[in-house]
Image 1 (spheres, each protein chain N blue to C red):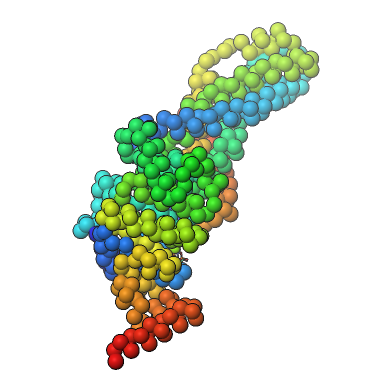
Image 2 (image 1 turned 135 degrees about the vertical axis):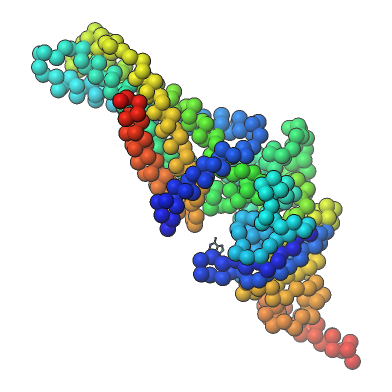
Length: 247
Length: 259
Ligand SMILES: Nc1ncnc2c1ncn2[C@@H]1O[C@H](COP(=O)(O)OP(=O)(O)OP(=O)(O)O)[C@@H](O)[C@H]1O
Ligand SMILES: [Mg+2]
């Protein structure tokens, strides 16, 4: 077994290869478009669905916890907005995509490794690390922010819908709440985090796939590892970035 | 010309190759034969830089591959064609895209010119009209042939072929053998074929290297092979009783001629 330090070292060496000696630009363009569809467009459904329920739950819970008459009614909308923008959208979307996109990347690259397709690339003099990983990395970095923006909007809208339908809040209060003390830095903060998450979620699973060995069973294991480690890395990065960006 | 010098390779504590020395000549079909698991594929992978030998050197036209810088590697690699034992086709690409891949990466041809070249190669391996199929829709033999088409599309100076005939019917086998022969003689390429198939060894082999126990046990041409007294080699080549009979007859003829 390669120890933790060994893994770190190998990961950074791989990253260096990803960014060095890239192939012709013309070659990457169609690959990036493909990945943008696979990683971004095909995740729209799941992200929308989850953020709908997330927004609904946050709204209902906030409403349920406000019993005191001292707390203004618009707090429900305000809290939903803050939670969705500051935390839930970027983090939850990142965790969901770790499961969907991360496992996909790890198993795709892992399968290419064990069936010698990566060797075939190397033999032809192609920088396999860059050819396989860079398009996924670029596509994630472009698409994740859009997904997060969508999650924010869907979550807040669902809060409004569910909140008014269940009489937890009135539409006017909710709208007043989501406009109250609005600071666009929250969105910037979230998108900065998202870019870091995109990097983590495309490269860590790619790393585990790239160094898979053995058979189909090992590809499955490397895919699991890719997902778990990228989730942990996302949470650690989340903590560090919050510390740096908010305080 | 490729010279393998003093190559040894072990995985952890398993010694796979021990002190291998072979010269592979240009314009010739050089066979590496040997029983399963004797390190033939490992030797091939060491030669193309996929595995790093523990000691030894590999000279491409006199320059040590293991000491080349990235640019030299890249230059050599564009002159290398390789068929992997499992074909190693790109799953996400059609037959046409697979075969075209080296051109896509390295040539400035127009789309039409590339397709023309692809079709030419597909014709050589008897796969006309299969352009749009994916690897998952191909039989094992068709995958092999697609792999060969991809290996030869850049007119390689160095052609590595790992088990071209396994999984092919005798007729297609001969087609592939002839293809390897034509390419080698037309391009003057240094061709290295790993195989168990004595038929193709006898059909197209110019130079034969027999590997056993991780060492080069025997080297020679096919006429020498038939007359060799090397026990290990004979056990491999004349494994079946039928072949042993042939060998006995051959010996008989030889001794008659000698009288
Ligand atoms: N990556 C590897 N790690 C550890 N051991 C390996 C590795 N690759 C090959 N080996 C071992 O090296 C030995 C030789 O394997 P190799 O694939 O070269 O055999 P071969 O001569 O090509 O056999 P076959 O004719 O069946 O293809 C085997 O014992 C195999 O287990
Ligand atoms: Mg082999």
